[in-house]
Image 1 (cartoon, helix red, strand yellow):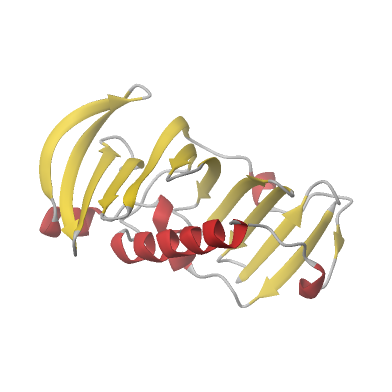
Image 2: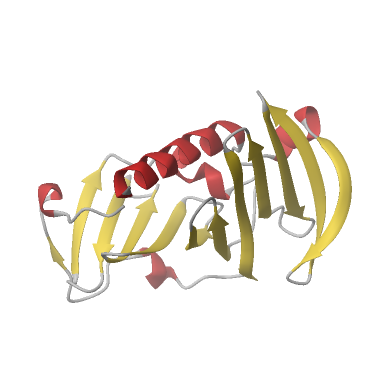
Length: 195
């Protein structure tokens, strides 16, 4: 069952990566997304310096996992706060890894249809709809900052919803994108399994 959920998550990530890409300059921001697709989880994601510094916080049944990616250092770190350990992956910054949390306004302008407006967490949003094969995709993007606040993909096998439950636009502390003091490095093979 757990492997099935893990495979479903990987499939969802692949589909989202292919459908949402990074847009022009955006402000620093933080969003907590609630994701629902036969399960419910919350991803907390932070973007700094137009997405060149990224932090993703995941809570799993095995504990918390934090991923920090830095283009300026061409590195990705995976941190396990409970164990105060981290693993470093050099030459690994890839903006495509974060696309499910970003919005491509150029794509929406040419491939999607604006179908309305709504307000999410006090931010006025434009709502867009487009088809991705047999999938029906609807996204809500804030007018301020062009931040993806809602993503709904209706498919043959079910519905995937990612909706912002908290958002902060503005300067983020640089320490969010660094390894905290007191953490020790471990080899990649020593990482625990996170579904």
